[in-house]
Image 1 (tube, rainbow, N blue to C red):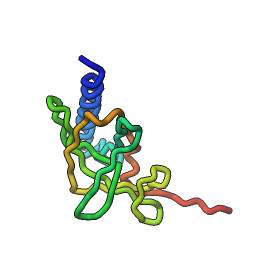
Image 2: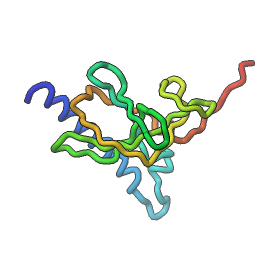
Image 3: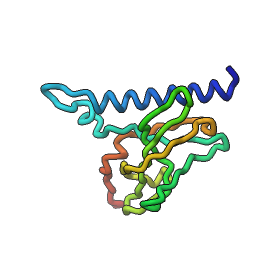
Image 4: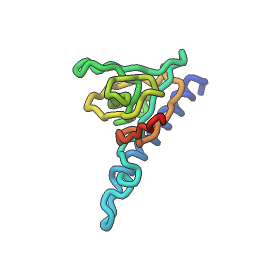
Length: 143
């Protein structure tokens, strides 16, 4: 297996693991505590961004809602063809404006927009905190 195939294999497996964890969080029900894992974590999504071979974050466009994002949720993974289906996460700063600058992101919002991606152009996956989907943030006074 050459380096490119090995890298794609690892990326597919990593995304498959993320999908499995998301499904486990979402599908686990306790007869006493309901959806316990989602309640503890506060989300059914493990957000991430993808890094291309050029070192830039992969950005995808939602042509209906007119926003660009580099934040995703895995929806499906085809391990044989090494393709993934992601839903786009819309990123907001503390004023409620769209942003793709990671230090400015205070909230990620799930959207219904899904895109298929070829993983051969991707070199890395970076996970983000699931609590970014809660939208809770505190602004401390300066004084």
